[in-house]
Length: 222
Image (tube, rainbow, N blue to C red; front, top):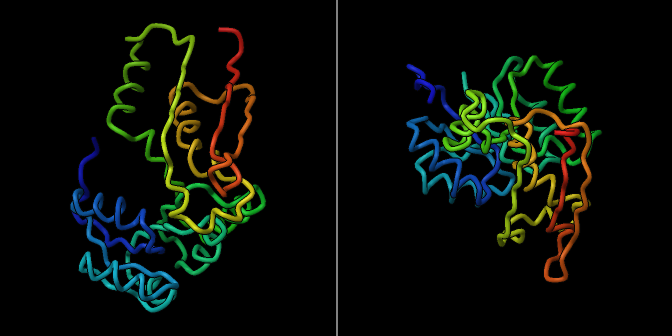
C-alpha cells in the first residue's frame, strides 16, 4: 500500500452517473479523500447525488474546473473527455475513466490536449492496483510461481449495460468498456503480447453492439 498524503487535495468529479455514487464517492470517503463537488449537465441529477454525499453541485464546467488545487475525476462518456480536459487549468491533475476516447482519433486528440496543457493525467485501470493483483504481480516478480507459461481468464457475468444510455449507439462496447480491464491486467503482469487474436459479438437479448469477447494474446513460443 501507499502512504496517505499528508494534505489530500480536493476531488472534483465530472459526471453524476451510477458509477460515481456507487463506486467513486464511497471509495473516496473510505480512503479519507475530500470531495469538493461534482458537475453534470443534468443538474437535477447532480444536485440529487450531491445532497446524498454532502458536496457541491456545480452549475457549470467552468465553475467545477475553478476549484483550486483540485484533482479532477472524469466519470464522463469517452466522447466527452476531450471537452472537459480543455476546460481544466494548465498543469492540472486528471483521472480519466476508460476508455481513452471512443476511437483512436479521439484518444490521439486527448493525448495532444494533455501534452499541450501539461496535464498530469492517467486513465483509470484500477484492476492492476487491486490488492490481490498487486500480490500476484509481486509473486511473479520474485519467481514464486516459477516460469509463467499460461494465463487464462474466464468470466461469465451479467453486466447492466442499460445503466449507460450512451452505449446504445456506440459501435464498440464490450472490449472498450469492460474487457479492457483484463487486457490491461495481463499487460501489467506479463508485458505486451506480440499479437492478439480476438472476436467480439453481440447477443440477441441486448441492444448494445457487443456483449461477449474471446481473445488470445500471443506471447510467442513459451
